[in-house]
Image (cartoon, rainbow, N blue to C red; front, side, top):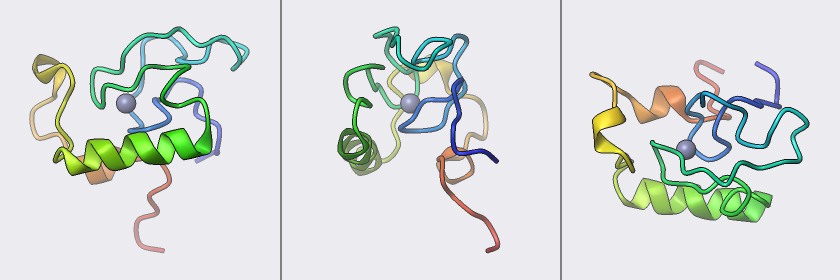
Length: 87
Ligand SMILES: [Zn+2]
Protein backbone atom coordinates (compact mmCIF):
# COMPACT_ATOMS: atom_id res chain seq x y z
CA UNK A 1 0.00 0.00 0.00
CA UNK A 2 1.48 3.39 -0.93
CA UNK A 3 2.16 5.99 1.70
CA UNK A 4 -0.03 8.61 0.10
CA UNK A 5 -3.69 7.80 0.51
CA UNK A 6 -5.42 10.80 -1.02
CA UNK A 7 -8.90 9.38 -0.50
CA UNK A 8 -8.36 8.26 3.05
CA UNK A 9 -8.56 10.13 6.30
CA UNK A 10 -4.99 10.69 7.49
CA UNK A 11 -5.98 9.98 11.06
CA UNK A 12 -8.20 6.90 10.92
CA UNK A 13 -7.84 5.67 7.33
CA UNK A 14 -11.54 5.84 6.45
CA UNK A 15 -12.02 6.26 2.69
CA UNK A 16 -13.76 9.53 1.90
CA UNK A 17 -16.07 10.34 -1.00
CA UNK A 18 -13.80 13.21 -2.01
CA UNK A 19 -10.06 13.56 -1.32
CA UNK A 20 -9.77 15.19 2.13
CA UNK A 21 -6.91 17.35 0.86
CA UNK A 22 -8.26 17.92 -2.65
CA UNK A 23 -7.05 16.45 -5.90
CA UNK A 24 -3.70 18.22 -5.54
CA UNK A 25 -3.23 17.23 -1.93
CA UNK A 26 -3.02 20.88 -0.93
CA UNK A 27 -6.62 22.01 -0.87
CA UNK A 28 -8.26 20.64 2.24
CA UNK A 29 -12.03 20.44 2.25
CA UNK A 30 -12.37 21.28 5.95
CA UNK A 31 -15.00 18.59 6.17
CA UNK A 32 -15.35 16.36 9.20
CA UNK A 33 -14.47 12.68 9.05
CA UNK A 34 -17.52 10.56 9.90
CA UNK A 35 -15.30 8.14 11.69
CA UNK A 36 -12.77 9.94 13.87
CA UNK A 37 -14.16 13.48 13.74
CA UNK A 38 -10.99 14.94 12.23
CA UNK A 39 -11.43 18.22 10.41
CA UNK A 40 -9.42 17.90 7.20
CA UNK A 41 -6.94 20.71 6.83
CA UNK A 42 -6.93 21.41 10.53
CA UNK A 43 -6.47 18.40 12.81
CA UNK A 44 -4.48 16.53 10.17
CA UNK A 45 -2.33 19.41 8.92
CA UNK A 46 0.88 18.18 10.56
CA UNK A 47 2.29 14.76 11.51
CA UNK A 48 2.08 15.83 15.16
CA UNK A 49 -1.53 16.84 14.66
CA UNK A 50 -2.34 13.49 13.09
CA UNK A 51 -0.67 11.65 15.97
CA UNK A 52 -2.56 13.79 18.46
CA UNK A 53 -5.91 13.34 16.73
CA UNK A 54 -5.37 9.60 16.46
CA UNK A 55 -4.45 9.35 20.14
CA UNK A 56 -7.55 11.30 21.07
CA UNK A 57 -9.72 9.07 18.91
CA UNK A 58 -8.09 5.97 20.38
CA UNK A 59 -8.67 7.27 23.90
CA UNK A 60 -12.35 7.59 23.08
CA UNK A 61 -12.45 3.88 22.28
CA UNK A 62 -12.50 4.53 18.49
CA UNK A 63 -15.92 6.10 18.69
CA UNK A 64 -17.48 7.19 15.42
CA UNK A 65 -18.15 10.89 15.06
CA UNK A 66 -21.25 9.97 13.04
CA UNK A 67 -22.40 6.83 14.78
CA UNK A 68 -24.96 6.03 12.08
CA UNK A 69 -22.19 5.82 9.46
CA UNK A 70 -20.41 3.02 11.28
CA UNK A 71 -20.54 -0.23 9.25
CA UNK A 72 -21.63 -3.47 10.85
CA UNK A 73 -18.68 -5.37 12.24
CA UNK A 74 -16.32 -2.43 11.75
CA UNK A 75 -12.80 -2.91 13.09
CA UNK A 76 -10.46 -0.04 13.95
CA UNK A 77 -7.31 -2.14 13.66
CA UNK A 78 -8.14 -3.19 10.11
CA UNK A 79 -8.73 0.40 9.04
CA UNK A 80 -5.97 2.34 10.76
CA UNK A 81 -3.29 3.56 8.33
CA UNK A 82 0.24 2.35 8.75
CA UNK A 83 -0.75 -0.92 10.37
CA UNK A 84 1.26 -3.79 9.00
CA UNK A 85 -0.32 -7.12 9.65
CA UNK A 86 1.89 -10.14 9.88
CA UNK A 87 5.21 -8.36 9.45
ZN1 LIG B 1 -10.99 9.86 10.16
